[in-house]
Image (cartoon, rainbow, N blue to C red; front, side, top):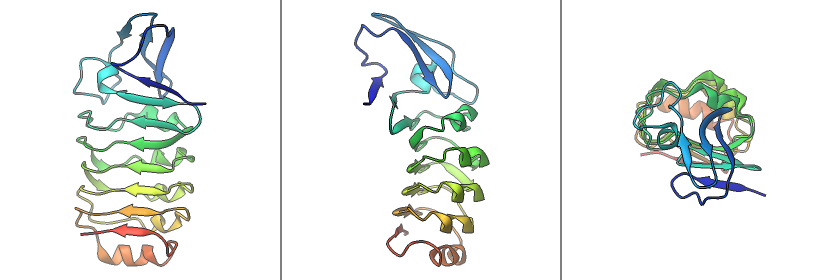
Length: 185
């Protein structure tokens, strides 16, 4: 059974704490939420509840949606959330490469990194054996790791809006399942 906590729409009666990546970001009382300061790397909100967790689905099939939060770096505590099946980091200000620690998210099925400023994807993304959707669209990628070809359950690879190497994609296509939908410009 899934429990869904939606910050800003929480009805009183819940007692406990809201955890994101093992960090308490808010204390939940019967009728109020007491926000705590945001973890490092998080900007764009006055508290962790507005900056980190607009939607957190816990339990089987956990989802963490950090989209449109003005993040400038990926909070490192995300990578300890080995229960995550869906991670949405889209529409932020993330630059450089996704941290290699992404490999710890072994249950991940959907990874949305779209509409950021990423310039690289680590080879470790190829260790996400359960990944079905990899959305890398609208970044600044110029190369792709061949290890993407190891994603045997991949169904959708979205590369639109990038200047990636077409030669890299051809190598990756050779080892991906033939049924994969690859979205390109």
